[in-house]
Length: 449
Image (cartoon, rainbow, N blue to C red; front, side, top):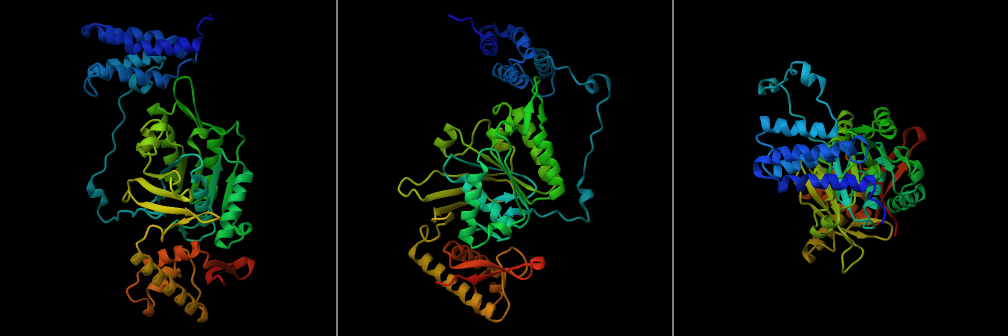
């Protein structure tokens, strides 16, 4: 039998930390923790154990046996000293030699005469601007298809995505799993569904890094999270091009750390949140749920810190057991809005569309048809008057213009917006571009039967 290697020895030493403390007498457990922690130090120094994982283990064992004490107390300081000793991490010089830095505070008086900024949404009530969103779903469920839809609709200024209003502007897809050919096929098919030419979308940017060079961050021997050349290149590109959306596919391909080490997870997500806030860009991270996340429907994977550190989370269900074309998109978390929204989606032949009729009662379906027909009548009227309307979320949008028309009665702009999405999904209307190349304009028109 072969002798155990350094990796197995390192893992055994880490497991023995909990064992040695558990079997020690109650009064000797702190000493036992220090001795057990010292046994793992050589493995950290030689690179066989990650320092952040060791620190987490020491704090976990200390809390399990009531050794950590009150936050900021002497006992917690002892645990911190044990963790530093075990990982060869020295206390920062500022902590030893210098006085603590000043704490800068703000009082409500500073807010007088100023307005609280309103929350901006890249996709209304689903994806906030200037922050992180986690989008989870099993492989093959359609997660990439839907996010490519969003990228195309945003860059082409179509103004809607699966039943909600979206902004317009440049978008970047960092595809670390799907090859270029697969994404191209999706884009061309999605554009065909909406009746647009994919070659006329200059604001849609794609990057396909080498599969051996997809890490955005890596972790050194002391557990510190370090940006890679790819992350630095991403920061530079975002600063120069000012996109409205960056999609990263996927967490497993870009995070070269311990997915269950909370300090590493939080450090990585903090770097992305800073990038999002500094440049007011929405960043969406694609993720695959764990076995537990799949079974309980939470959609989560790895440490709970992935979910806790983002401000919005979307989850795509597996195909419906009775109808393989049906999916459900759910807002699992929304710090800036209401969570719990569920959108039933159906594969429409070219891409996914909102399944409005399948989820409606006969009375609701009839009411929706009436609004759809009114939308088309008002569209014909506006075109006949030489007053075209568009699908963007801006002045001149069809929903807002139609709501102000005398024929609209009590039909709201939101109802017209839903009708517009249904008509686009059914292929009854399309977006058309006109005008010279230097000054292109978009408007909606009927699709002739």
